[in-house]
Image (cartoon, rainbow, N blue to C red; front, side):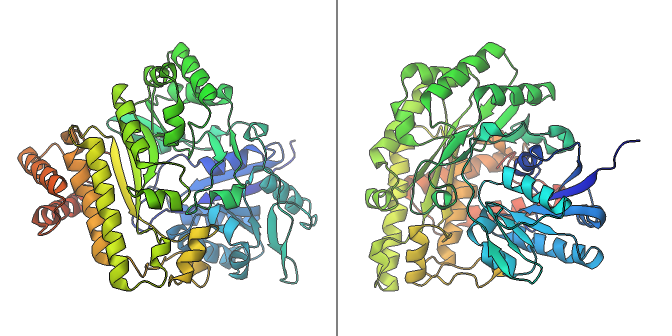
Length: 506
């Protein structure tokens, strides 16, 4: 008769109030990879529309060693709080562990909330496995690197940080813990899954918290391990891999080797969204660019951030506007469409002591500079994959957050408040709505091949939207948005009737 295993429960909350995300729960799978399955029975539960996941988590928690959640800032906090409240009613003594970006930045606030007993900070694979063993063996958590916790007297204890490890020290992700088919998404008619092949970032942009959490360290999974995962995906009928790394394209030698080996395997796979720095991409030789394309890469992603050189310098992007334009043209030569990300509302030094009118002038200049840069990139050909624009939101752990607080941003006051997120005093609702108009209407409809990603019904109306979007972009005109309002009304109707968004993928 075998020894009964103790149970460990891992759960992933909903990312947004009204929508689910069926991407692979990669963070939880990486945590699970370090847990000894000869000793523990791992239950991994993701939020999903076709299961009563909250009841499932509560039921599994009854005799668990611990219940752990992966948390990012925003709605997932509120969702996790609700689940923990439910757990406490039936299993008041089960330890609750939180990890992820938010808890790494706010271990004190997270523990003070009472909804977590233990917080794992930064890289969590080894730290969490050691927490599980300590709890199961009823050993002390004191001195265990990379965690904070509340002791039996309620005192919050912050242990020393844990050294960042090479990610190749960790075992492969245990995909057998999940029903893999539940995590396959539709991407332009292809069966797709998400994938992350690295941790950290070697750069130090002043608006990003990556450097605070990982101290500008970066580690990538070996090409052997990546290709083993991708072979498994191909066996499961996956056709497209969405690469979600912040920096997949950091090391040209590694990228070159990866592409050669992927080509040699002849897997029926395409891959997309491979992210990298513009300046690094431009340093790649022609052979590497050709290999990227030949290996099945359908598009590449960059953070352009701003069309103002002064802003790019201010946020330490190590990039100039001409390089953005040159990169788009270089990618065009190899028929690699680009996903570019832009950030508006960045509080620069000109905001300090400025009147709201002066700030509005700065924001107008920033807006126009972005459009001019995009005109330079796509004046003749709208052959981009996506153009993403978002409003800057102050996130802790970097210089820009401190400055944002200095000039008027009121940070959330506690854990649950971070789940709601606050308004930015210098960025109006009108500007946010204009961003939505660009993001959901003008850029998707102006794009070459725009009909591929919209409902196959009402094609004449889509054609009209295409021409109005093109005109709005050409003349930088956003007034009297009757076309956009009609589009939003039709999109909302489609959502209510079919549950589908306006596009095949977002």
